[in-house]
Image 1 (tube, one colour):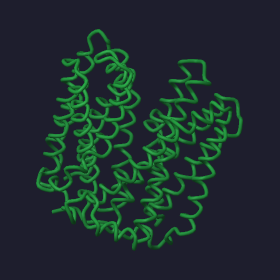
Image 2 (image 1 turned 180 degrees about the vertical axis):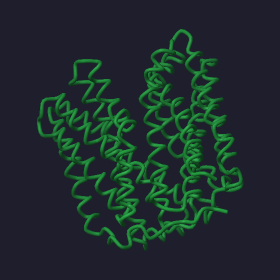
Image 3 (image 1 turned 90 degrees about the vertical axis):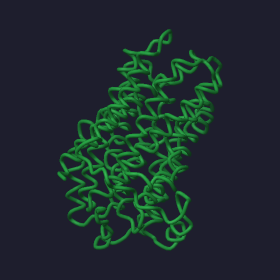
Length: 407
């Protein structure tokens, strides 16, 4: 099997599936308010989608190894298409919540298994990182295009056009997997019926590489969670131009589309020379923290926001694909269990970061102390990164663990 063909097919899948997701996300709250009515439905719907899309695949962890990866990924796209496609035809709150859960569940299974698939097919850290980075470009191209397409297609009076297009995107994602990808691969079974077994938790306590990787994943995801929470609130309040606000929020996705290939080439060379994934994760996390410093030092609003976005975008290009590379190379027998651990770690960090950004930042900002929030995040994460850096592995052992592709 050609790695180029494999990467192209999986990239097409990610582009189509994420295009569907990013077409509905910008207007999901507006749709729910118009379709059902009531303020509570918006918050409940957004929370349920985030939660189900993040971790609901873990609920079926014990059954996933019974099915082929491609078959499960295809079935999950059908579930998401069904969930979103049926939304315009009900005005009942309970039905909408169930459809949101179904859509999120499909996405959760799909993108969890896509990471597992790469880890099973590609045997080396450099190759995996290259594939994960290409997928990152596809995801962010979808994130950049989705909101504009949503604006063109959505009408609160008749949302069927948008949601039919969303469902179609998910079906196209599943269709793109039907050739060029091994169909007989299955996830390696986990060591227990739990998504993350007691044996793995015990191993994580004993193995410093696993502990460090989990810790830096949670830490980086915490800062990543500030983009759509505290930073979005900050921009909405302090930037008067609608176009500038939109540009600042969309800039990371656009930057990744343009520059991810160059960043991947550079990090690939570093990996090949013996630099470990954990070390590169440290660099990315430091850039995340630096973006918080820029927001807290009192620069003119637009200048500070633009510089912060530039640092944040660079950090995301380095950090996000490297997280998957790092977890794929950990000494964990089951790739599925390794990525369950990744999913739990990332979701925990991002959820806590979003919660802090949506509550603590608002409280401090209303008291005229918004800058202290940014500096507090920077100092707190910086101190923890310093501790992790002091315990980082040596150069020679950093990329020791690789996994052979499944037969």
